[in-house]
Image (cartoon, rainbow, N blue to C red; front, side, top):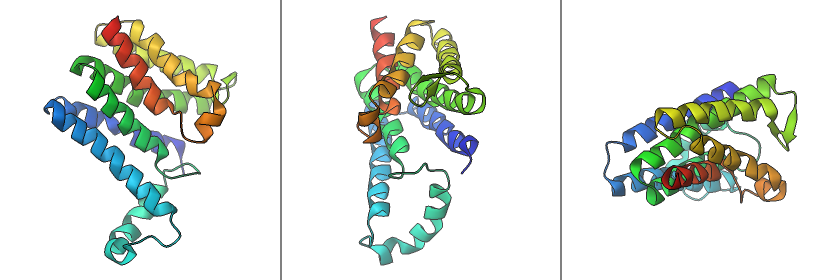
Length: 195
């Protein structure tokens, strides 16, 4: 699996963030929480040795599984996708539309760039799994998005803190209880509202 391909999939989240602009508040929540729930269900399904309903969904599963798992990291499948849509959903639940939109865009663009830059050019390790170069790329992307949406540095600082926090607690991160896909939109959205 190619990390560039995985991050391109991650960037598809921008499409859902843009679609959310056209929806009513309840529809936004249904969109993001619904997608998160589907990723969770499919992840649990894939982890079972003999999944129930295999005959019923077998045809679809045989076609989707190779395509979807090609972009996944080792471990429980779709953990990142689940937290991405859950984080965006919580942001759209808690914050006004402009703040939630900014938070989601910072997550989709900043997190993808930080991973790509960190993997390709990262030489200086900052924290477990985070490089100075990747974190700087995240900060630049978050700053650009924050600037375009009227909060030049506040959102960028908060979002960068949300990106780095899980690295400070690797045990919780490895167990899947603390994920930057959840924290980035929460930190960024909160600062947009409070700033």
